Image (tube, rainbow, N blue to C red; front, top):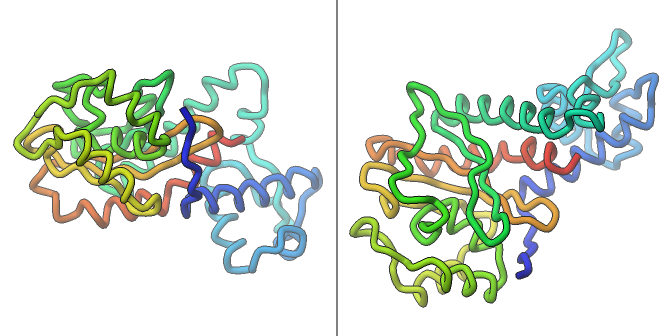
Length: 252
């Protein structure tokens, strides 16, 4: 199985943020924004946006003279001790803020050893998570996150997955034709969120955007009660615009 690497907007943003962070890390006593712009080649406007995100995530801090130094979050992730827990904590912090900004439950999903896996999520009383009435591992054909992950695989990887998981009809809207599903996955632009309009469960709509990091397919997803379906596309676009911090945490 191979991944189809088609860089998305969050991917480019994460790469730029990583470039800024690496530059800051090389200056232990601090570096000014003017010097950062010169060394990274980024415009002042773009750099300001990235620095705002890096400060919010705790990766950089601004000291008394206005220069930037690495922050506590980077130190925690850079430590060999408890790195896995530090990464989970950092991602949870980001997911909680995403949940609040999009007004929906949000999820990180990865394609691990040929299966769809939700690794972390953030929900709340006003943003309930999806009721997993059918195992997500066997319902990738019907969920936004499953289709996003399958869309990142090559043709053989998709075929292999579908050969191991019967495409059951979960609602009247579920696609059960592998030919139709494969054609839709092939036509799906990587920069456009994948949607699930009550294909997995009546009463729930979902969206997912890719966050491929390294050799593993991944995605960010959100779910909304169907009465909030009118917010789905806007929420998905917000999720996509704010996916870079998740990608950055996975890349560090």
